Figure 1: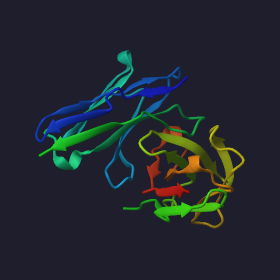
Figure 2: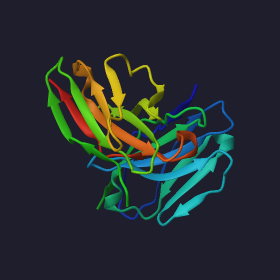
Figure 3: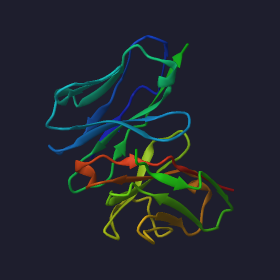
Length: 115
Length: 115
């Protein structure tokens, strides 16, 4: 069965610290897609990144970077030099498409960045 | 930048009443979705919709729920007879193509409170 585990319920860091949010997934499919979404206090879900199972290259976007490792079924997210505006709940999600339409979300990690 | 919109932002209703949640997906998108998030919990898939048909639904999406695209722009979720446990944030999402090969973009959500 498909599953996404975000073991870190809540993380607190001081501004400018680096922080890594963990995501471990389970799937039997060889084709799947992984996502990260940010949910700020206002409640909306903001898309951050999509990665397919055939692309294990790490990605960097500004202060954000993602480390995808199929060998450990992990898709971790690192924020470098965190800022107060990064405070949010971050969700990792899995899609086994094509053929299915749903995303399976993890339980989320609440990140608090303290000034 | 195009975005998914949802109305109302907050709906309060009495148990047993019918509610309709409205969404306007991104205009060139063809696939539409509803998810819900009970307070403090993970986001859960309800249903996906394409070409005026339900393409996939979860166990949560029982006979009390229905979806419709009444015109060329709106996408609605109806709950026929609300229960206390239906209280949640409901997110609409849309994607240009089928979920597995494309990113779902989420609206800001409608918070439903059932009293």
